Image (cartoon, rainbow, N blue to C red):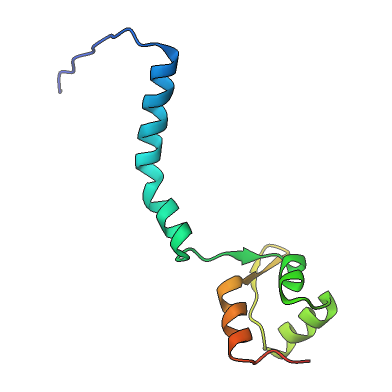
Length: 96
């Protein structure tokens, strides 16, 4: 069994808040960097995808059924990868 030493120090609430915030930021910094660099996949709901593409939800449904757009399911919900939508827009593969 490893012996541990417990040290009790008096700390003000503001100092403790700053210490916790700094440690938390250190732990999540790489996640934030990935998010800002665009490496994290962003998934859109049906409504968000239709709004993003500036189309009607029925057109989104048709494109999905025709295989023009890939959707991902989770339970009864469908999600669209924003990077894939942008790539297909750039490739000019999305037309009525």
